[in-house]
Image (cartoon, rainbow, N blue to C red; front, top):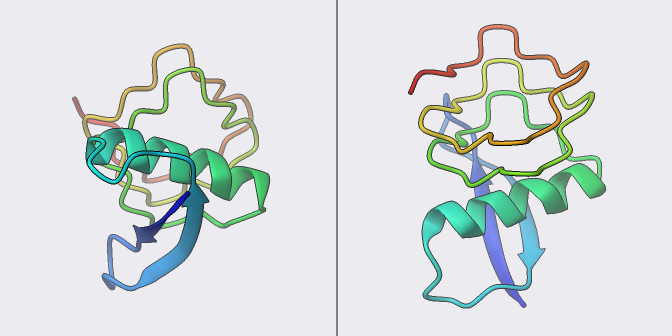
Length: 93
């Protein structure tokens, strides 16, 4: 288990720190994806989070607060975004 910080895209402050089961040298995208999934299970607020390049394939983001989140280049393949708040989220690329 390692600790991984999810950062606010606006202030640069840590939104939450996730305990993820991942190798230290794994790609950032994989670690961030696991951290987001951990955060969802632990009721973390993803509003304003910097999730760029995250691997969120197959993630259940149903009902997640992703308002103002940066999801640029995130892998959302097969992700469940039903009822997710994507207001003003960056979904480019």
